[in-house]
Length: 189
Image 1 (cartoon, helix red, strand yellow):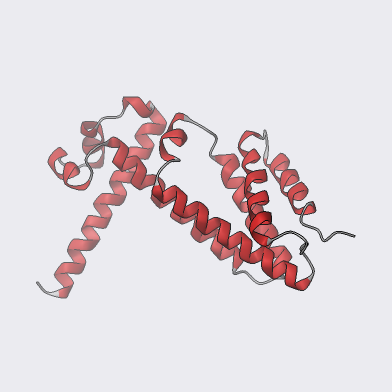
Image 2 (image 1 turned 180 degrees about the vertical axis):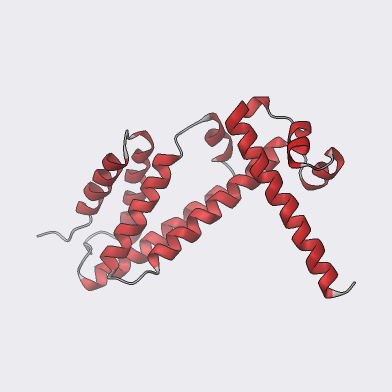
């Protein structure tokens, strides 16, 4: 097959997949996790059920793929913040605040319980840990971050502390949590 044909088919498959993921997420948000069926997804997406089954075996598989796409987008956003101009402390603060706000916006739900298990989540958590650890290492070298605790341990401290953002009532409270977390990273006097 000509290259253009292959690219066109691949673009069509991506479009169908993305539409399926978006439609499923919207239906779950509207109707609830247990109320969404493959038939509803196919109808709302505008594809046949047989076509939908070629892409995904069930609703859970669609939701896992949707979540994987969301997590990848979050990691890309955090990496963009890490790569912004500014000193290491500013970049660390930007990454930690964005991570905490992501947690704040995605409260614990039945959907979160379903999706926050699995290999893609473990890989994402490791990637996030490494990203923050590297920023902490950089800050320790410049004297902006304490160096009496290993960067791996400090990264775990940050990630665990900021998961509390899920239960906070406002973005202002999330920012205060980030400030307290950052205070724990100051070099000892």
